[in-house]
Length: 103
Image 1: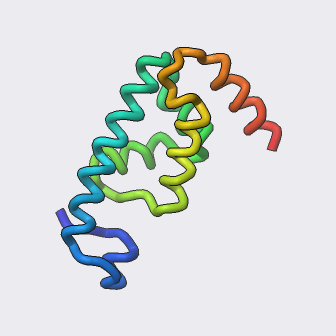
Image 2: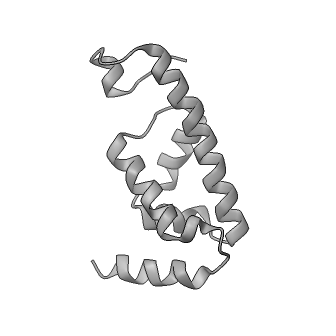
């Protein structure tokens, strides 16, 4: 599979870096999905909070495209704001969504 990230297109890094990133991305996606499942948080709810579409998440998971740094940083921050989603305290998710909805 060929890398489609902007940095690779601009030849700003080696292909090996991209391949490692894709592997890391897949493991991160699996870890987040596992944490959401444990916490009883739907992927739809998580994507809403992270301000991405579920179809975008699905394309990342399938390797069709990769997120840019800014978007992935927002996804990671959302997951961490939820306590890594491992606390099983979904009330924390509700308070985040209410504050996000106010903006």
